[in-house]
Image (cartoon, rainbow, N blue to C red; front, side, top):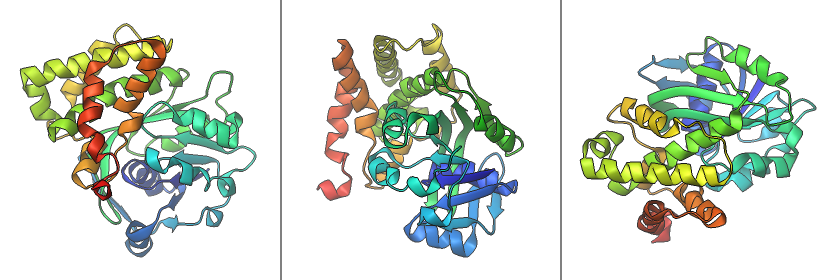
Length: 307
């Protein structure tokens, strides 16, 4: 099985690196200093689950060098989606499946319009990982990958991917209810990312403060209301499940949006709390907490170049 990682940052670099360490045929598509480091020194992962170093990796900035593959992990930041979509054609063969591992709930639709629904599966990831420096991924929490066929599709090559992930050092699940899984991740992430970003704190101080915890719970109710407004059949236990997952996070767990905010990078806000607000308007729901999150972070959406 040949796997391309389109977007070799925290998410793509972590899962792709662990697969490469097992001997899987993984091709990293990267750019700039990160690409140079991958070519010169390979990929390092620092993780509470065990550090690893893959001294030689396939790394390129030109997808034609990878050629058609079986699986593409589409793991670019949401604001880079349009540019990354234009890089997909050389990677697509007759049986290629592209799995978006992006935040938000729009990726499947965007990719299906661009390359055709038969080439797209659903996917989501629970992982806290960033590029600590070029060629080095720092993983701090969670290590779970979910993927599955969209309604009306068969599992096909996804079963082969599940086999390839076995023994790679992370939890991989082939799900037959991937749409629900994507939305379950969304309702929790919108709260985690929004609250850690507006407070500039990891999750520990947020959940330890009674007033902040109450705001977080209100935001979670709003996200779930929006999902139900979209007729997503979330389990009745979603609220308590997300709360339990949040309580289990290490106190130092930080959202990628907080990392981006502190580094002066663009934010995925329009696809997270911004999407909650947008969908709430479509379904007639009220989401004042997420509106506040959007308002507080709006000056930083474009990164430091926004002035």
